[in-house]
Length: 176
Image (tube, rainbow, N blue to C red; front, side, top):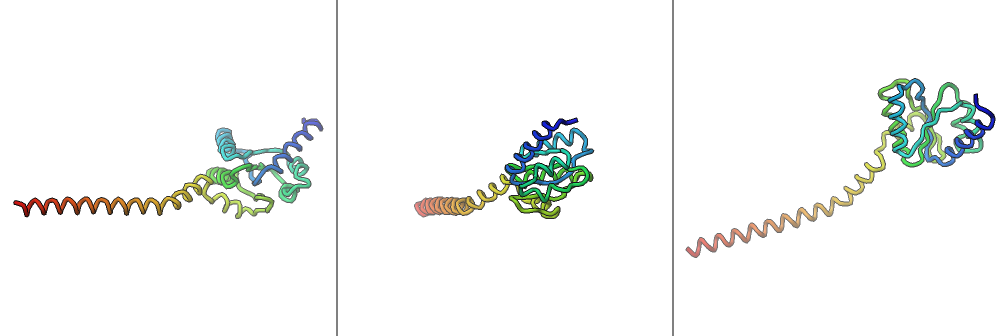
């Protein structure tokens, strides 16, 4: 059993996480096999996130006075809160991928930059490409005109070289 001091420490840690998070997502991982739970936690950590399982009353007390107060107060049943400190779509995507394999894991709602999200909006965020994928697409878009110009210049160079070889061959034939 937790002492009052332990609970206060947990509440202050949760409050810090709530205030520092870009995104907060509600889900449930209770009943998930331990290996899969560890894999999910690892993937969430890799996306600069954190999974927390605590009593609903502790979530509610930690959320008092924050943007997440509406989301985290009055929770019923088992809840897991995923905090995204960096790549919010990456954390949502990790939760969505696990929910495909396990019915008990479901996205229940969330908060992104102070805006409440429905279950459908969280799923839409999870469907977004990751930050690295978006940067790769942007880089490819920037490089496309340069690559096209390089191919055209190379083709012009080859056609001039072939034209020069053809003229030399024609000149040799006429000399004979």
